[in-house]
View 1 (spheres, protein in one colour):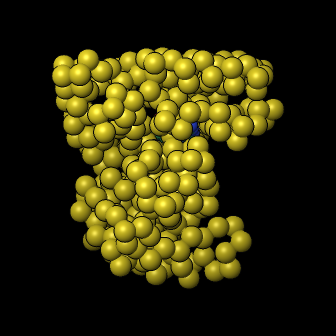
View 2 (cartoon, rainbow, N blue to C red):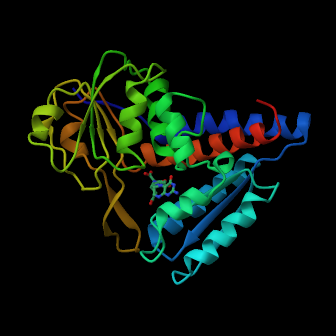
Length: 295
Ligand code: L34
């Protein structure tokens, strides 16, 4: 049996259609145009490609977007000054500082400086705290995208054994938390594995749903999963280049072998990645509605 492919590209398309209609209605009925600013420090090619995709998508949906690119030597003070400027700018509802930042900049200081009401990444401690408590807030884009992928491809999560690989603040910790909550795509029994887990295979082999977010290409092999598992592969690893210079991508899961055992699986590219971008748009629209007093 070969797994059903969960297409993040297709599901993204459907959500973007919904958002486009919502943005048009916001403009028509309320004169509201959601605004997003992305800030990139440095010239990491992967970050550049993600940030430009974010701006392009915003534009296609009718969201006002500004793209700021700063040299790698930019000081923390300069970056904080820029964030302060956008915190006060009424045209801007969402501020995104692309990670990772250069080493000389304190990431926490930067993320804490963003107005929580404009924190469309959901990285500010106020939003992280609200998320943990199950209150309304901006959910971080990648975990938010995973919840939507599961819901829209009809994956039952209630009472299921979910195993998450990786404990990052961006993916592992928040998705583990969200999936144990009483919510759609929640109510699961969650195990979070990391580099100090004693017997990771023991856990992955009993997973009904396996979420891999470690950033190691092809780490998970077919003999580490059970028949019928649903696999969400968050890894977007650059493993080489084609002759024309295009990046070759691999997930954290060995797709070709694992898809023969899984019931459903996300591909890389075209799985979780596009959903991350789409959920940023969803959060930006939410931010604009809130700023306009519409919810
Ligand atoms: N602040 N920093 C902040 N917010 C985020 O949500 C991110 N993330 C992660 C890195 N830093 C961040 C992203 O935007 C990862 N990430 C991201 C976004 C989009 C894609 C991958 C990672 C994506 O679109 N991936 C495509 C392939 C694109 C390519 O060819 O490189 C895919 O199909 O998986």
